[in-house]
Amino acid sequence: MLNTSDGYLETPNLQPINELFGVYVHWPFCAAKCPYCDFNSHVAKDKIDEQRFLKAYKSEIFHWANQIHQKSELKKITSIFFGGGTPSLMSPALVEGVLKELETTFGFAETIEISLEANPQSVDALKFKDLKQVGVNRLSIGVQSFNDQDLKTLGRLHDVSQAKQAIEIAQNHFDRFSFDLIYGRPKQTLAEWEAELKEAISHGTTHLSLYQLTIEPNTPYKKLYDAGKLIMPSEELAVDFYELTQELCESKGLHQYEVSNHAIKGEEARHNLLYWRYGDFLGLGPGAHGRVTIGEKRLATCTAKIPTKWLKAVEVTNYGQIGGAMECEEISKETQAIEMVLMGMRLKTGISSIELLDRTGHQIHSATIEQLQNDGLLKENIRGQNTFQLVPTAKGTQLLNYMAGQLVEGLIEASER
Ligand SMILES: C[S@@+](CC[C@H](N)C(=O)[O-])C[C@H]1O[C@@H](n2cnc3c(N)ncnc32)[C@H](O)[C@@H]1O
Ligand code: SF4
Image (cartoon, rainbow, N blue to C red):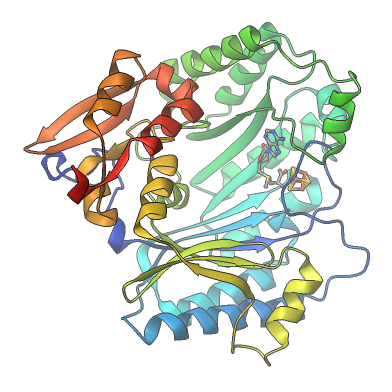
């Protein structure tokens, strides 16, 4: 635990950000495409050549290790996240291959967190034990709903009984697991959501990701919505859904630590905290984003989204010359400050003014802070001389886009003050 007087957050598991180094591995395939989802996920037409993927992931790992090593010491990895798509469709042997390569190349911190997103279909749940054996130590299961009819409408391939089985199997094999639910679904009532959330909490998980349904562009749900065929909750009802979610979770000790994430103290997802604290992580696989510091430069990286294009981009240079990175851009201090504010204000603990200044050379104009305080969107917790924590209020978290947007507008270079 860090001491609060140095300007960092008083939250368990938080090490100084420069000691952390994460890796995101994207698996871009799903058994079926859910109509609400706009993640980079595809239904494979042919059998997937896992060996080819392993070789490509290895190539990217080699590339980044090489790039970083030219300017500085390699850091040990503190967290890895296999996301998707549906990474529980990967064979445990492929997951193991990627993990071995990462461990040999960078080394693993003793307390490394290795998470994997899993779908609850029985075929995926059968793999949980093997995934544990190859090194995964935290599972995030996409339950989405405890209502069979709604699971069908959401286009899910599992039913409630499979979801419960998957939770039980995860519980038997993993000390740490979480599951995702989507609420504010078409025609869902508050009472139905209350019953569902109570059911979710009764499974004894120490972490829950609870997402309000968003209508994403270019999805079948968007078409239905535009045609008036999806009746979404009114704005008032959406607020009631959100507030009920916070109350119920809080009453059971599942604290909201980020807009959509709740955990028992100490069980926060460390890898995701790394994103929100704006730390360094490699993004491997199709469409993966990364933020990497090489020498004095901080880079934003992004790879080709289409799996075959990504494979070809990695392979074209005979494995390992350029990696799959299609775009790799140095981020200015100003952009870093913007990104740090946008990510950090998602956290209930907000951001530290001194950390913002140290890392980006920027601070937020006092008039902006005052205005947001007067509007009841921001608390400013004094942590010591010239050091304070910018903490969103409950209302600030609900109006996150507006509040964070105002903070971004109020950013100034330290010398301008
Ligand atoms: C990459 S996806 C999940 C992984 C896994 N393939 C699954 O579906 O179970 C991450 C999570 O985002 C959430 N999600 C995806 N699209 C959403 C949307 N349009 N609105 C709200 N939540 C969404 C779902 O809860 C999902 O579990
Ligand atoms: S929600 Fe999950 S399973 Fe459904 S398409 Fe998106 S990534 Fe795939």
